[in-house]
Image 1 (spheres, helix red, strand yellow):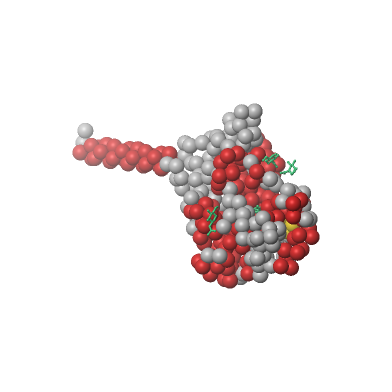
Image 2: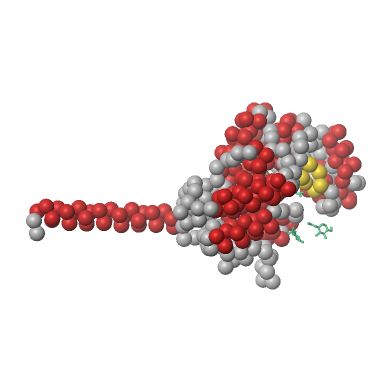
Length: 343
Ligand code: HEM
Ligand SMILES: *[C@@H]1O[C@H](CO)[C@@H](O)[C@H](O)[C@H]1NC(C)=O
Ligand SMILES: *[C@@H]1O[C@H](CO)[C@@H](O)[C@H](O)[C@H]1NC(C)=O
Ligand SMILES: *[C@@H]1O[C@H](CO)[C@@H](O)[C@H](O)[C@H]1NC(C)=O
């Protein structure tokens, strides 16, 4: 062998070793729980993925712009807060297991059929490739963005689907509307989200509705801050309006049929900073909304957030962070064929 061909072999071996090391490192990263998600994860494996979800979601939202964006955004939140964003919220109960969606905080979750439709099309186009968890993340973004005609935030992809869904975990992890600031901060901290994330993500309550049983405790004397009267942190005129809608105290507490807008004074589906305007006026609907005024750090953020541009910019960052909570990547979890059941 001539010296030059020896050199070539040597270079070749070096290259092979480098490639092998890189592959090992990549595989290692892929195995890691919480490895990075990335933009356009399906660019090669399923190029149509993002467009398919967008087309289906936009068509459905066009037919129901006031209610559907709120449903899909809340679905994403509940998914991410229980076992991470792994589509566990979509799994149906079986004879042997009561799933997250059948826990009390589920009441009024919706949008499942939109996810099912997107999944069915994607399974036909690229079987076994696109996770239900990524569909939920995309659907929330696309639905809320509809009214703006542009994407409000970027969605990193590559989540995989979990195989466990337990009602007890929804009860333990989804914050309650009666929670005080200490409880909310601790809950969010458990997901790697800070006080700023809590204040900004609560702004999601600019769209959608709540049922009387979620806030009735603030109207009568049974709330944590009240003794025989309405919660004193609730604006009196607003409390009177809510009482008129929900009915007298004992019945209101179990009234899950009457829905009220969560951001009165702003059109039902409009995603805007008006939630914070209401908050400042004592018109935060839940005790958990009003609680944001009880912490110095949180309260100090509210005024700036009444500016639309600032709210949208900050929401973009916070919702992206929420979408990374506890994600399964690489070899963890699975790609469910049917979002309602593990494979
Ligand atoms: C901070 C703690 C939170 C609590 C205690 C809470 C609680 C609730 C409750 C009780 C409802 C009404 C359920 C009903 O009565 O039907 C609701 C609705 C909603 N929540 Fe939250 N939530 C919180 C944070 C979030 C976050 C972080 C998001 C999303 C980023 C979100 C998005 C929504 C939306 C969009 C609705 C309206 C749903 C609809 O109209 O179908 N919430 N929330
Ligand atoms: C929510 O959970 C309750 C049980 O707590 C169940 O009876 C109800 O059907 C569930 N609702 C939905 C929409 O899944
Ligand atoms: C609403 O309340 C009724 C009776 O109180 C109950 O049967 C029903 O399951 C509840 N619906 C939801 C969605 O929680
Ligand atoms: C907040 O609520 C928890 C229960 O969830 C309670 O133990 C705690 O004392 C409350 N904190 C304040 C400051 O009210």
